[in-house]
Image (cartoon, rainbow, N blue to C red; front, top):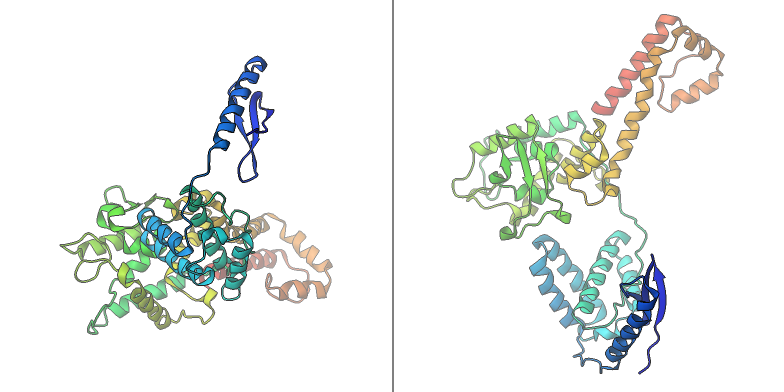
Length: 429
């Protein structure tokens, strides 16, 4: 069977260009820069390619969607974290419902997958649909690896626009103190403990805000992850517990005094039969009871007066982690360092905190006000239009004042007072 092979040159080396069974063109290096040797190697490659293409195709047993999903489920169970695999199983169940259990995987087309995306988009956000599309791509890529099909039908399916809600809620200092005091008050109330009650919220809140650990990372935290001598906490995978760090971004966090005190407090109440920092009375971890922890935290938030009916403005356990990132940004820590400390796979995720840095930068220019001449500032204000000054003040940047030429002393004091007010409102309002 004749084959068509072209000769091409890439970065000085000669390559053979040919067409694969799926119709796509590709190249193969001939490992030479010499023209004389190139013709010989090209001929050898053409003969080898013709031999391969003349072979009868392997007989395949047509697999159904049910069989492929079963194979893929076993794969993710053995190679992914339990939490991630659990989410994928939910996605796969929906796919089975849509595509049909007995549908041959060879009948699944790009158009059919796009129809699935439209079907899901009617029920959930585009961002959630994109996660399910990612699962479909991975599953069909594995089907190609397993030689079930030649080409993945999901390879050209495009993602939907990102319509995720931005949760930028973080705790101000006074809110953090209020929540912490309410947690201490609740634990010291003397009320009888009935059933599964999470008693360690004071330490839990402090560790969350001062280390940025995710909920699962805190629930799976063990004392051997903490180097108390060097004050370092390590976030690492634990295959024996079926715990894998999200994005596989293991990291080491230097403990500040607040986090250290909270962890030392937990060490005093350490269970003799287990190593978990936060544990149930029998020493087991709270991960199987994560919903109970979330519900009790929600009750604590309401008791502290921090509940908000709007999801993006409400305080949740994840708000503790977001507070960690936000406070670091407000203190001027570079985004790359925040990315490492929070275990973000991409700097794009960390850039959500950039607006806080920008807000701080806006206030940095106020430092120059003390350097300018108060007399000059007062003279300039006297030249401005009354409506313009009033409009500027109504935007909240300045306190509304009648238009007048300021005295040198009052100008400097006014600027200082305004700056102090703005800075205080950023942290305490």
